[in-house]
Image (cartoon, rainbow, N blue to C red; front, side, top):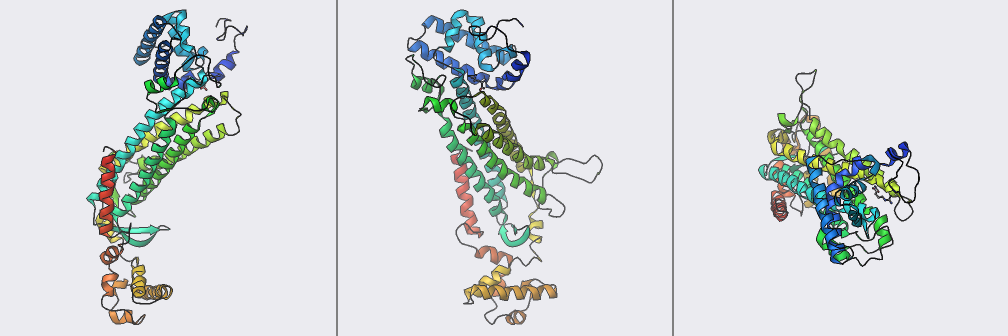
Length: 463
Ligand code: ARG
């Protein structure tokens, strides 16, 4: 390499080869190339519009930018390490094409505002994709819930069978989680959606720029307030990764249930051949690898969140080169989340529930013991003693190898005189489910309402 340095005015010596390769980021931030070009085109348009640079030079720069864009799209752009990052790579190429006037592109701009601009533009479009991805997954979940409406399964607490619930009710719990996740991304989008361009290196500029104009050109709904904060801030990225960590955490719980439910022991769901794998040694096996990997992605995204929080913690204002390390965790997160949403949506579209097996697994677990206690409490027995009486009835039934509903009325009345013939309705699976008619409860009337509300929500999201 020649002795000429990138910063030719001040430096007389080229950077050490190690320093150069250590600090170069173009291999990673070239993912921001299109955003960088969009931002530069808007910037140049504004500079010319405000009379800061001559119109004819602006036109040459715009032409060079379009050529650079085409080169990148066709894979013919020369990405060069010695120009550090994507911003300098594009600027150098523009100057090569437009001549020295191309250097006007960097009037009233700094890489400090340029990089935040690119990152905000990039994350805005990634967030829009994720919002759509969540809506699609919700649609799949709600379709499954609609299809199996009426089917029952055990609700587990501590992974022990606890109470009978509708399968649709259980599935809709995931709809609620994902709806909150989507809301978090929408909220995060509001803070991302502010134009940082024009804060320059951090103190603003002496040129008569128009930040509202670039905001309009680039589709931002506001302009950031404080130039120092703008070059220092990466909260919008941390927040995006936090939203992603919360989402992948939820997807991990759903994946975990699919792993459990698809086991021989549960037999609740068939994930289908397209989303399971065989074993290289045990021919009988059908492994839920895709669900397992989806479960694992939360670890990776949470790691990215910790990286970003740690990177930013304790940095003095304003820009520090440390911040160049913000990109990998964010790019990796966006890619991971989009991939996980897509694969889970497809896997759920093809899976089949074995509702017969779910129903069967309700027998023998005394899952309506709470209903016996509630029955007694409705007849005036204080709940604490009702609970004890029901416990004794369960112990007795267990000894006899029967379910509560299989005990005779006279057997049951030994535990409490309050028990009458109608107890059998109360302790049946269907009776239990139907009785839980409190708001948000598992009764078909409640779950039906939830289903209709979920459907309305999904169509509002455009699905
Ligand atoms: N590549 C840098 C980054 O991603 C761009 C900003 C550089 N600014 C600077 N003053 N060195 O953070």
